[in-house]
Amino acid sequence: MKKIILLLSAAVVLISCSKVGKDEYIISGTAKGVENGKTIILEKQDESGMGFVAVDTVKVENGKFEIKGKVTEPAFYTIQLEAAASKVPFILESGEIAVVIDKDSIQNTKVSGTYNNDEYVKFNDEIKVVQKKLMTFQKSNMQAMTAAQQTNDTVVINKLMKEYTSIQEEVGTASKAKYLSYAENHPKSFITALIVQGLLMDPSTDVKKMETIYNGLDETIKNTKPGKAVKTKLAEMKAPSVGATAPSTGDAK
Image (cartoon, rainbow, N blue to C red; front, side, top):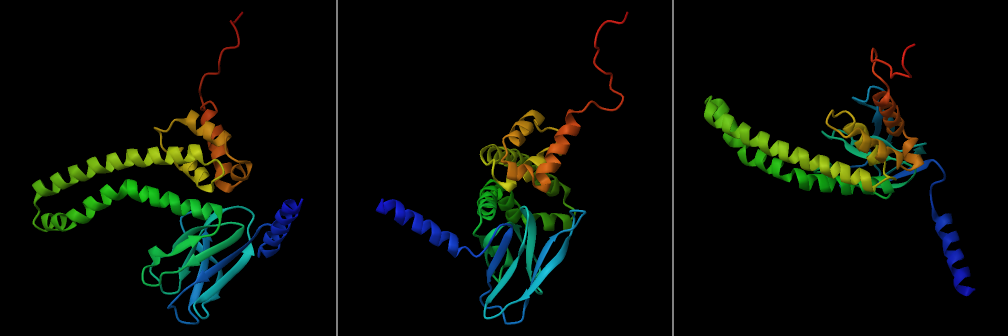
């Protein structure tokens, strides 16, 4: 009985310590070395899905910043440090999100604290491993390609392009396999909905498999914007095309 009481007490403490309520988020940021007064910009994708619009701004104070708000479903947002050349992509969702900004290399900024952001980081790390061979080839042959282009050395250019295309195809196949594996094993991840949505744009994708993955998704993911888009896309792909002959219901009399 004492153990039960202690466990219940611990649960109450954990709940009471939570800073966020339902559909609320807090982004707690660390910006070591960034001077006071620098602006942090929170942005979301615009309606076209091609750009971003600012939704909130805060100032850095003593190397810290905090952004609070409400959100009804996970979605991709970015954080940008004033005057920085690049943005930090992350998933805005209910919960406490920690952001540690690397002012010297924004790409090395760390985001953690919620399920989907932790998954996004792990997934990206795995994809980087798969794509390392292609990036290594590009880095190793950049000077050779530039020199060949300057001297119009078509033999070297064609050789490098042939090797690059071969590695690109190899990496593409490995990446798609990684996407599928992740989607099949993470029904509660927002990333899975994005993966399925993207794969449905590829004519070579197994639609039946995508439908199986979609059907196994957690309801919270099905109800996100990409989850609903997948449902619509699957319905469109299953519907008979315009002008197609309707199936026969019997012999004509």
